[in-house]
Length: 571
Image (cartoon, rainbow, N blue to C red; front, side, top):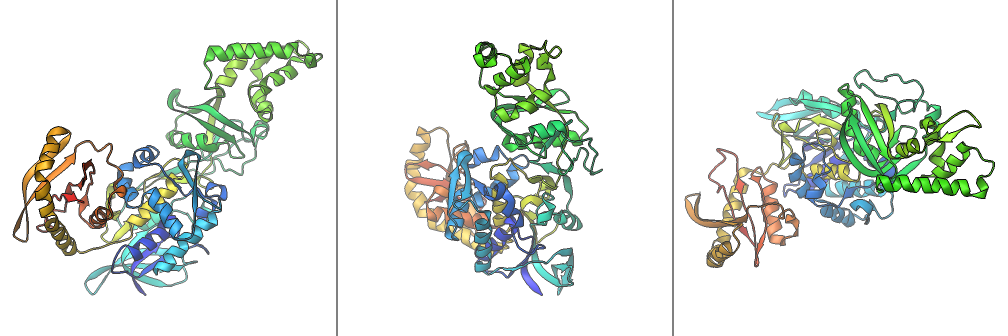
């Protein structure tokens, strides 16, 4: 059976691509989604511990600082469906949301099922066909009546074909949700190269945290299966959390990352927001054969001298307390530590730091300097990490050098698009990765507008603005003199179908404050969106000079026709 577009993968990126493909084009192409699992969106169901932190509402400048690879490639996709537009999308499809600490957005019900239901319903209502239990076994290019098409086969013997193909299979994380790396195989068979993949946002396993370790995967050096049994130390620490502490990551003795945040001790190892944040660099270092160490500062917000003085005062108070009468130094030390950290973690802490108490039983003494150092610099040598079985995201993937950022189309195989986790783009925990999946899926919806349509529309757009530009020419020249950071390029001749046009282009050189293009007028957004969805390369710069809002710097592929290379849009 033939479809205009086939999408492999029914997760966040795949379902959003299906919705986008059916709604972004007037053609309303036929769309088929092939999902290998019994239900779509299985991985969405487990995100945020079932609450589904589906996006982070930061603007691009802050959002991009949390993207760990190829943020420049992500930018066009981000603006095609920014977080506020994604929230509007879900609201329109029956799911309200709430924004919590850290700009993290959740469904108001805190049920991940609501995200899946809204996304699935949107794709189905738009007219996309979603087939479940449809595992793709192979993809190849064929010739049919002089046209190149994609031939797709499934395990049950069905065959499908399409003019365009979108790979949205996810990565390797949580394979029980269907993410088993199939997309890398398909992309490679169609000419793409794969950057080294490795687990990210995963638990780091300290030495002696688990029983004697054995490497579980020869291809993943340092991989420790999460099901491995805990040691006595691991058992003492597991289930505890430390809030608002300092974390430093060392590779071969050199500090490579420092931050503040929360750490959780789990059956996997060191997790929590801060643990996940340092895991990418740690895993990569271990794979490269480096030695990795993590140091925790439980009182990072207190100056060293002040803290040391405070601990000494507390120790005197404990000793003077009548309830300490008859207690051993070890017992009194636990009371002291109870004033400095959660009570439940003290047994594990003392097991990791036997040096804080010296002497034989009955003659014990507290080593104050050692105690202070242990609290301010609790070190863990890292033996390994939990692998794909429980990591949040896969780092690495299809090389972004082989992808056109404005469309996420393949430079290697015409008609092929890639989106979501299969790409070499990953980010921190906190809603960033799901936003990446939704945005890239929405952009990679397989639009194939003819260049003739784009040329005609851009000519019409330019002609409609000529009189407006003429009336604003003089005040704009005055504005350019008043504001020296405004560039003015006048009398630029552009030829379209033999018609000469004079365009006056004004724009701000500094792009730092011009990110929020979606806040401008509906007409302006429509013009920009039309250009963005085409194969024309568009870079938008926006500013306001009085009542004028502008965008510029539009180029097109070489030998594509006599379309103006620069257009000034004014609304």
